[in-house]
Image (tube, rainbow, N blue to C red; front, top):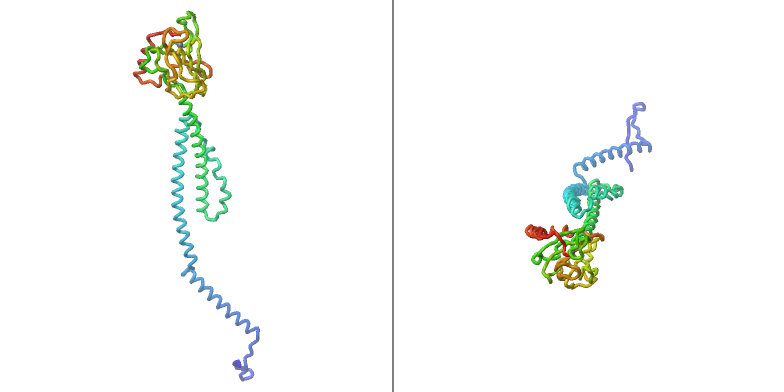
Length: 318
Ligand SMILES: [Zn+2]
């Protein structure tokens, strides 16, 4: 049974029981619960700051670790970017210059860079977004540089074929050479007795001296004409060479020839004033002076000998 509390009534001069109404009871209970709630909240805040939750501590440690890793990664990106820049400069200033190619413009090198910036904006963490953007830029620059290297490789291969094919050496070895007749152009023919063009150089050498192909080529023609036994070589890239007055040739049309390969031997066949090789170089069907093609192949001593041999005569032999 519940205890009954009393209070002294001065008007009636007697003790009367205290009657608690439901409204008063509810008010007191609410007041009590409010105080409890405020005390609990204050305690919770105090303990949260003084003793943070374990998950939060771990998260802070992870963030610090991620930041440290990002700084390392950032340094690596900077180093990779510097190396790539050096490679690009080497490409533009050396390789492309050697191969007669224009350097890539900055707009060509920057093509595609930044295209996925919008996509990466959805990433919450700034440093992850930063890494993503840097990685994307380096990837795009690498793609462009890879394409450039492929172009250089193709161009180099083409140039190598061209350099190997170009007529660049003497068709007669200096040890066999007795005299070089450098008359090129119109002159009096030594046996026919009238003026006609001389479209090549004459190398005097003992009959049977080897005649060398002056560049990689394919044999176009072998046969006999007023120039005696002749060989025509097609070097590609617009170049053709002709070898005349041979005692014999040892190649056949269609045969692939390498520079320095023996293709025939010096003779005196056809209309000729003596044993020699008549040698012509044609570029796009026009005869050009062959002397411009083998001077660079000679040493100083060989060049002096060539000048001496060529100065002994101002005529041609055919
Ligand atoms: Zn000649």
